[in-house]
Every structure is written in C-alpha cells, then in structure tokens.
Length: 205
Image (cartoon, rainbow, N blue to C red; front, side, top):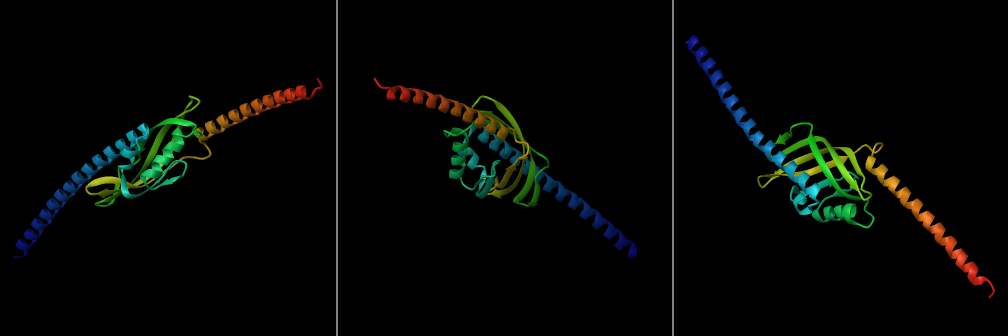
C-alpha cells in the first residue's frame, strides 16, 4: 500500500510539473504577443514625433496620461501637446525646425500585472536648428504602459537629459548671443545715423 501511495505521489508531482511548464509556456507566449504590440507602439510614437503628427501621437497615450517632455514641461492632453510642438517648431521664437528620435529600451517591459508594465531606456535625438546646424542629444526615458480596451497605451512617460551637457541648449545660447550682438551693432549704427541726421537738421541754414 505504501509503495502504491508513493507511486501515486510521484505521478501527481510529475503531472503538476508538466501542467506548470505548459502554463508557463502559455504565459510566455502571451507576454511575447504583448512585447510585440509594445514594440509596434514604440515605432508608432517614433514616427509621430518625427512627423510632428500630434493626432497620431495622442492616440498612443491612455485616456488619463502624463508626458514629461525633455524640457520638463508636463503634457496631459492633446491640446497641450499641439501647443508644445507649435511653440517648439513653428512659433516666431522657435529655434528648432525638426527632430528625429531613436528610442531604445534597456529592458523588456516588466509586467506588474496583466494590464500594466514598466520600461526604461535611452534615445538619440537629432535636432535641426533654424541656423541649419544639426545637433545630437542623448536622453533617458522611462514609461508606464497600460492596456485599455485590449490595446497597449502609454500612461506615464518621462524624458530627461544631462543639464550639464546639453548641446541643443548650448546651440540656442550661442545663437541668442549672435542675434544679440547683431541687434546691438544694428542699434548702434541706427543711433549713429540718427544722430548725424539730427545734427544736420539743427545746423543753421
């Protein structure tokens, strides 16, 4: 009797191991499908940013989201996104005309539960300045993704860079100094010309 019980116990253990392995394999397959969907989401975000397509970009985010841009501006809806991009690329004060981003993940998304995951990585962003100069900047990013209505969306995203080594900011500062210098020279010349004209006007005829 004892031998039979031992055999039954061994068989049960083997069955549990087999079913456990099958369940793990099924879970891995489901996660791989999620990883593929998340890679597609990353590519869609990249294309939307490169094309400045705000509609497409906003569609990648969850109903409730917070996106902290590289200058630490926090965006929470499509209107704010549009205003941010307009200010950055199309306003009269804009110093940048376009950008290309190349995000890479350091890890596979780590799933907190069936519908939530976290990930982080880096990106090489290439900016084209109004001067025509092309500047590259390395940034770090982190993101929390959630599944809404069967689709993965970004709930929280944060982008940041080393403020002590920021080539874009350096380019903007140099451009601002040049503009300020030119404006100063032009102002001086206008002042001298105005002075001469006024001096002539005051001379007795």
